[in-house]
Length: 315
Image 1: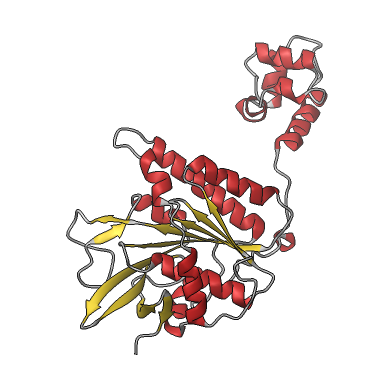
Image 2 (image 1 turned 45 degrees about the vertical axis):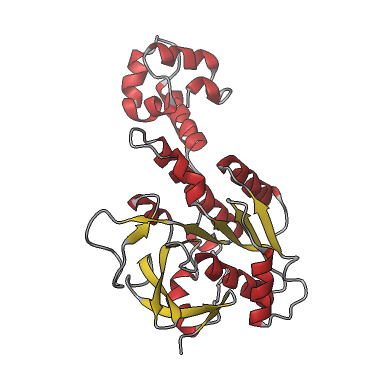
């Protein structure tokens, strides 16, 4: 910050004299030279050494971040989510208490079904909660949601009133939805679902520019700040891309895909849950595996089935 911007705490005449000797910003004043060296370079009579030291202390106070006692910081309580399946919930413990969870997998691996089950069970068990579903492809299916509610035998009458779907096909539109949530006074929304983040960010990536990576980092930081401010759990669905190398991060056999958006995207979330599907005899078995987590060992996995959009244990 330029010293001229700190008026009247820093007199304009003094700021001009300091600028003449190369002391232009608060960083120059605080760290470039000692108070005595600065005083000796100023014209005689500009300021006394005692007053210069007092000025430096005042500038330090103006530019320093206010201190906060750690005991005064309220704990962040992100909304716990449940799938209704004990085996899957043990895997999903990595999601509890963390603000951002990536759910990735190949086409038809059960990504949307999983988050839809999590959202509807949250709405059914917490009558004061709401879920914001940001649809980035315009393909949210009300019929699928109704089928899942019927399959799970959810009797809560206002579930769909509290499932708020916003269609946002561009990143700017998503920012608009998030800003409206930040500016609102209601704290009903306990969970945000972005289905999916791949279509939002993939068009910005280029092999010849880092702009796409910067846009991704900025957006994920915005999500994290929002999650902390509102004590939210944010689920981001990510598509997959083919493996170019022979090794996979997954412990499951026949895995030929990996999460999209590059390796650095995994570290923008607190957990990456990888979903896959394998055909076994006459039924499809889905697998949920932790590829990355801040609190749980990687490559822990479980299996489940999907019937009429609802999750079920494998017999």
